[in-house]
Image (cartoon, rainbow, N blue to C red; front, top):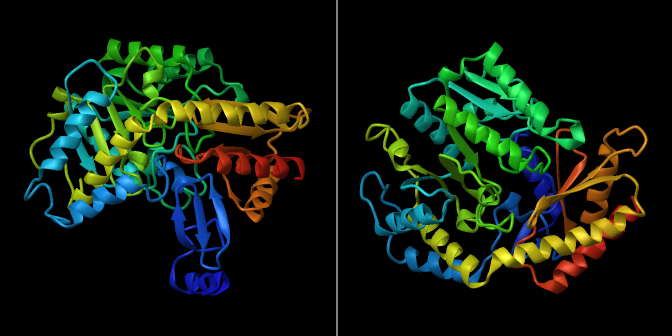
Length: 422
């Protein structure tokens, strides 16, 4: 089978709305490497968009899925419950940041977790309004894309959008938005547009993913917590991309002195299996009536088994420390390169959630075309990179935390070559 043949079949059989970045097709994968149907090898710095912190096909995760496969694959938890759902909920209730009693419910996708977190917040507070942030990404379903702060391609032509959703600036130094300015804008929103007493929740990514790997300043997170406490607003941390070791902590909110009332997670939670979760204060999680939450596939037993194995792998292989080491190695190479490449305007992130931004040093204009050239050059050399940011001028790095040192060094050599030759 040839990649070109599959491209033709894809174009004939599937809609263009499902955008595809690569023109090759996966045949097999192992840890941080992928081979296509023609046998070409790639180093995977995308990880299925931050899904594979434990790498492709980790033996422990495969074994856990195979064991569950021999028992049963589906009952619908709301009809016939099963033990491993409860076991994973118990583990997450102890692992999610927050010194309070928690409860957890499982779903299938990241945006499902986000939408259910909003449902829970609205029910618990009996308020309609939700505040999100500029350059946020919370998914592609109707409520998710309303929370998301990017029109093209996520909202374009799909309106009308959900009501009672408001956006306010996220602190972003590269765009000239300081923490103080972001505070003022949020207070202005509450003074001029939506009454704080009508706001159910503020939802924030501790580090924005699609928005450019922007790290929320600690002072702004403290401000949000204090504001929420003052007005009985719930704080929701969207940890769909930042969770499960990506930032050097199991959850990014562990980097902050304050905690969220509700946490959403997905992506690397189940090592490649579709699973998401909402974990929050027990009284808040208990607010909706029985039957108000759920879904046919929510908390699939195979995915639950995989997630339990993921937690074991992260702990036993010390992947949090590994993430710090890998992130430091990457930042050192980029910082050394920055002296030679003036278009590198910013290197930022926490742990292994690192990004590099490119701007013209004189005009500060986004170097979008340059970033695309770097991405294409690297791909041709066998390194898969993802871009992000509102102007697509940021390269984000999402390699598995299990990547071998030799493969990591090979990838960084390709990255440096791609930047120097683009």
